[in-house]
Every structure is written in C-alpha cells, then in structure tokens.
Length: 288
Image (cartoon, rainbow, N blue to C red):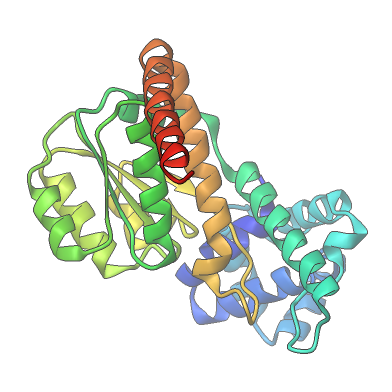
C-alpha cells in the first residue's frame, strides 16, 4: 500500500496534533524517515507520546516502524515525483501540462496501490447480481455517479445516478435486499450522500463507499469501502483532484462486472453500439 497516500486519506479523521505530524509526513517523508523521535518531536512541536499515538493511528506499532515504512516508500519514489509540483498562477502552459499530467498519474497510481482486490471483488459480486444499482454523488462526485450509472446501463444493468438529495432519498427508500447503493464522496462527509446511503442501508440494500477517507462517516456507514486518492493544489481542490481516481475505481468495478456477466454484457454492448451507430448514420445522411 502507498503509505503517503494512506496518510493523506486518513488526515481529516486525525486529531489536530496528529494532523500536524501527518502534514509533515506528506510534505517531507524523507525528513521524517531520517529523524529520531526526539528530532521529529522538536521539528513538529509535538510530544514524543503524540508521535507514537499518531504512528499507531496510522497502523504501526510505534514510530520506529513508521520510519522504516517511510524510508521504504521514499526509496521507491522517482526524483520527479519527489520534486515540488504545485501549480502557480504564473506557470506557463507547458508547466501546467506537465504538472497536471503528473498529478493525474500519481492519483491513479496511489489509488491502484490502495485498491484491495478482495474488497473490489466483493463489490463486483454485489453489483453483478443486483436488481438495481443506485449511485449518489454531488458536484464533481455527481459526474462520477453519472459515469458509473451509464456504464452499467450499457451492459444491461439497472443503474441510476442521483445528484439531488430528495430524489436520492425517494429512490433509496424503495431499495430492498439484493439491490446496491453506492455513495461517492471525496471527504466521505457529504450530507446529500450520507442521507440516501443510510436510508438504502435500512432498506436492506448492500452499500458501497467510494471515498478518499476510509475512516469517514460514509466509510463507517457502508458495507464496502473503495479508497480513491488525489492530492490537493491551489487550482485542484480535493473533490476535483479525486475525480480521476474515482473514475478509475468505477472502471475497475465495471470491467469486473462485465467479466462476470460476459455473455449478457457482450450482447448488450453489441446491441447498444448498433443502436447508436444506426442513429449516427441516419443523422449524417439527413445532414447531407
């Protein structure tokens, strides 16, 4: 698992003191890996006990184990990835292209590192056998919800995206066991997503979270959690930075479902492709 991506994911759920330590890990993991606990305590302005508690909150037995993991993570990074890459207001477009491309690639790589095959498989199985799949999201996550719904529709599954909380709640209340509800939220704290997911769960549907923060309210509310990643910058706040990684997760779920329902999915893709092709041909002929 990508340790730095994991720290970024759980950052919002940490205490203020632990967040200060986590931000130092994110900003300079090499420095933390080289520092003794006494040195790091002086740099971070926190007590050694707080550092140990933070290391344990991140899943390690203590600070030594965290240092070793960070050293290994730093050793695997390329020099380009370790270099600063935040976009500036005066950056030329050549730098914009390079930095945005690198950020997108890093988001995909970090997401892939955290995407557990067993957890993904459980979601694929639930979706493949579902009577209906509701996907809830607002803002940029609403675009991801729409993408997932239209992909499922292309292979003959009943997928519906909801970006309006009232409609989402109405649909969630009518779900039943065997259905699936997917909540998409970068923070995992979006009320318009939490509310319908909670109703869907009470209705008996299987629930899935696609979120940057596995320890969020959405993560605690759902049966399955798939973790996305995305580093914020001035021009790419969390929700926008995570969109590409959320789409990666959706694509992995879609391909897994299509594999498990290959005959039906293949036939549906051919039928929908033929229908679209015929429509476009007719449109072009009428336009001549």
